Amino acid sequence: MFLAAIDLGTNSSRLLIAEKQGNKLLPVCRKMQTTRLGSGLSANGRLHVQGKKATLLAVASFLEIAERYRAAQLYIMGTSALRQADDGAGFCRELAAYAGCPVEVLSAEEEAYYSYTGVRKSLSLSDRILVFDLGGGSCELIWQSNHKVETASYLFGALNLTEQFFRHDPPQPGEIAEARGYIQNLLNRSALQDKEIVGTGGTVTALASVALGLSAYDPGKIHGYFLPAAKVQEVFSKITAVPASARALITGLPPARAPIMPAGTLVVNELLAAAGAEGLVVSEEGLLLGRLYAAISQA
Image (cartoon, helix red, strand yellow):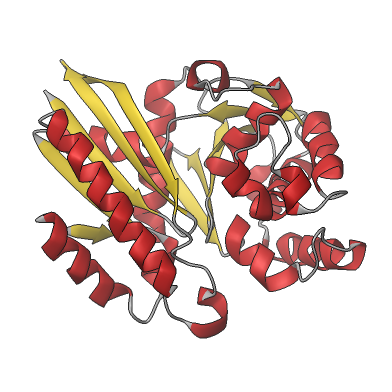
């Protein structure tokens, strides 16, 4: 039996198809399209018109794939952009009518819990981990304390941080410093101390791809890869020295992610610095797999 989950994110829309084998889920198909649904959201409070069109097209293509797999269940989720936008509820109704499936707008806590579940189900890790899920609109931190899952959500996703602070391409030193200060002022450093850091999300997997010099994206090489903090800093220096057009040519970097990669990498850099960590474990899995595990546990 196959299950499908769609994530309608601030910067991209993603699909995961997984096969249920007993109480385990085996991912068999992943797709991602850059849709920029939340572009301009922090300035005007509404979803981007072209982003909505791109998201509808992405959902249409994802539904075709789910149909080919004869997915027994389909789950569609919205995250940061759809939580914040004034027209988010209306667009969800439009999507639900088109897809014939409800669109769940996840709270920050639900998003964090599913991300944590997806990571824990796919990697062998200690209870000392802190997972961060860095998206286009927000960044969720998730960890365990006294056998309870704790979460914190911050509005410094890669897309909205870019739009808020980076007015030049490449960003100027003053803009970087301003964005860094914004992140540092928001972070709860105590949550990060004495933790093994695990990262998931498009920025994190792209960083791993660049660090590994992958000419073709390979989830098998990325999932579980330990990304040193020094390598994150090295990539940050490289990508902030050139404009997005040159960034898009860097081996391993998805071209569509080039405009927002400096801001996303800055977030990763600051999280590692706040934790005093030597690096992070990269997880290909997260929200989508976690949502499907929640579904089979309730069946």
